[in-house]
Length: 146
Length: 146
Length: 146
Image (cartoon, rainbow over all chains, first blue to last red; front, side):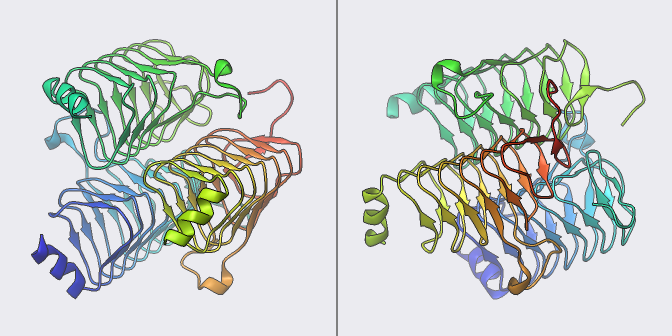
């Protein structure tokens, strides 16, 4: 426990308030996690990622470096629950992608580099790099819209 | 307090991390509750129900046996808030129904047996048994969609 | 710490369970806050406001007296995250407005007096006083709808 704490401290990880971070989760340098978040078994979080308060990030999620995860973002790992663990699907958030507040991500998708997901959206498929997606289910936002 | 703890232990109930489970809530055999969830006054949870992390289940909700409640599911009991307690409405999730991550359920509805609600949906009316509903507000999903 | 506690007690503030309320947040008389909520730096909450469980209310939000904030309501302060603090935008909920369960509010908006926002909605613009808005993004609800 102390070992884990020292490791996180050395890496400049900051966890605010009460969180439930599994010991098997890998957190990169300078990661920040807001209060009341859960980071599950074996989750990988890259360097410099910021995770808002009240996020739920279960086993099977990979968040690459520099991504920004707003408050209350919910990831999943089980498309047709309840499924046995071997049927869980991976979800990847690529470098620099940003997920707005309250976003829900259905498992098995890849959110591309520097993509932006609008607040409150539900992501149900892959999002190409650099695009902005919004809505339920999330769709590509045309220019000028909101 | 110890009595309550013994009762839950005897029933094989597992509550992960910090939760706020009212002492008046009735939890069946083998119920599992994820961390940072609240289960309110007099809520009834049937045998084998699994409740994800960060769920909000206030007074007036009944969840029948074998249902699966994903992370961050929000129930309500007050349709035109703030209403006095005698105007609160009941919500029932029938046996084996499954609610995806981040679902919000407006009170006064019944989610039928083995129904499936897609992640991020907002349920505003009754859902018939066995059907799949998605969206905001949730509607019946046609085959092949999503 | 004790001073803060005495101040809140004198004002009849009730904070249920574990919450993360910044010391710089200003809470009015008789404010109630549900468990697992976070109220951030300098947030202003008027007299008699009721805040549900699991709400996220960051710096830059003002909630006027008598407003009702349902469970799991998420406010934001950063429209194009991550932005430096000087670019954060203010959000105001005027007197007596009511926000249903699970609402997400994109920053920089004003929710007018006695307005009502339906459960699960995502508010992306100003809501005039007295109107009911629902959906993602929230739009004015026509009479008779749901």
